[in-house]
Image 1 (tube, rainbow, N blue to C red):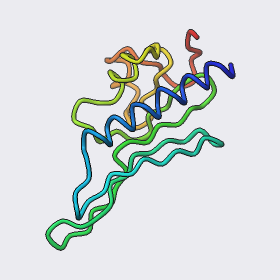
Image 2: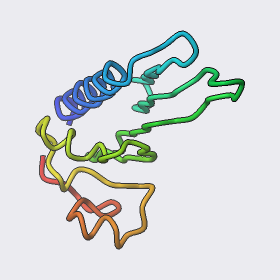
Image 3: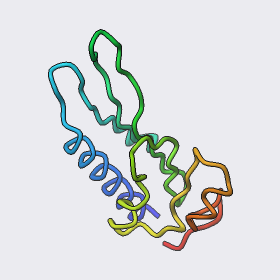
Image 4: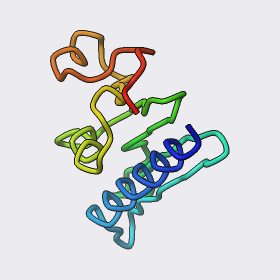
Length: 118
């Protein structure tokens, strides 16, 4: 399980870094990746100002819980699950924690604490 978690950590961190690089930073808005490796929580946060309006929000939040990746927040256009699967994560190991059960079932992703194949 330790090697599985190490792989998960690597994949999640790389996916979040890639998103941050893609979105980029400007003078007023920064995209920050926050990695809590001790608790296995990984976030991509946007902070700054745009035309006098405060910008702050979590774009992506992924937790490693047991043998699954829980996508707790996903404000990307396409959804992060495809990038995770392209990086070798089995779809049975991805839980869309922010969506109702029916949505996850339509995408054939993991549902709650069903064991994934690792």
